[in-house]
Length: 312
Length: 283
Image (cartoon, each protein chain N blue to C red):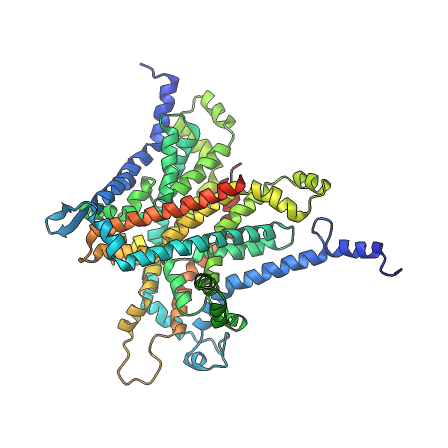
């Protein structure tokens, strides 16, 4: 047993596995699992991208599975026409950037108020802020809808902006919580020094606190923007047909397509809606958000740590 | 007259949060009360305005005992949530543990896993499911569906088939939870694990005896977050139903309001169950 002595086995075990899991084998297993799961995550996107370039022959051909034989871009031309892409894109940007900006500003003010000042009923009010996150929009949307209708705000961006200003926009409670945590984690010393120098609370907020909370502003704005962008239930209710967002157009893709490209009774070519065009539409709808994600990826991924939501 | 320091602080504080208080009253509390009031009435929208006629709990009775379809989707929602949410949370925890190992390039994986949080919207998911992009090819070859249904009792077979059919979409809903766990794991004290290992605890033991109890607050947060995101997601059939009832002259806003309240009640029960369960386990 000289060759496979205990010492040799132990040494190999250490190299492969390591004392606390830093060995080669251990790392290989981790990489394998991470890659496998990563593949499963991205599979729908691979599928979408690859199908969106397929022409009719590729779709029918049983031998063509995942990769198209050529880049066929007509799908995108049609999908863009169906979604009225450039106009819808501008409207979507408007309908998501503006409410997000206002929601972020008001969440910052409200979060700062809760983090820095003592006033009566504060614990109850703060509990209600958190409760608003649990209340599903479905339960408040009917009276809100009627309210906006009476005020003549339906179909305009104000139906989104006004609740956002008052800290009652999409998931506002969460953003207020983020700012609350963030401002509380900033040491008070600087603010107190400014106070001694005679600066008022609003000046302190604007000149000292806000610049220190820039990460919270970026995180809130990004998430708020993405969530407003992807919202469809409230968008359909409040914005109606006047303002169309990309996800709303995608929702009605099939119906619009049939209106735009009616199938003649005895046509022979593949003018009808197929998987490829659907996937091209989905891809087009996703591209702006993908760009935002890859530009601001660091902020998205570090958001949870930076927001201090897990407690400090 | 000069205000006392204490009063000045109260006024300044209220000037910051006042906008929220006003907004809460107008856009949340008032609608909540009004939805409840609607749910006890027959509501008609006429040219002159809204006409309501008090009918007591009739809308709720109709929704619970006469509306077979609503009952079905409500039960289906509750079942699916009870099954899906723990899977999402457990999966998020497992992935956070993997990402917490010091390996190179884990930032790339983190970026991949978080991507769906940004691009997920109701229509996108619906398109991907409809066009078959969310079922991995070959999974049906590996696991024989019909055999599965023969071997397992009905309910479990249903659950397994549901999971296999929608597991990509389940993964896609775990990004935020994963990061919450990861942030929690990174705050754990390494010296605690050293002490445990000196006392002879295996990694397996220290996971159950140290990591999991320390993660408990994040587990609660993640259960709450997951239940809520699943419940308000646009593809949820209950939401669709509530919304359709709103416009449908046969049902009306009063009935729709009752449905919304019932839905909220079921959601709270599911939420409460999970929170109780997690707390209980920890004791």
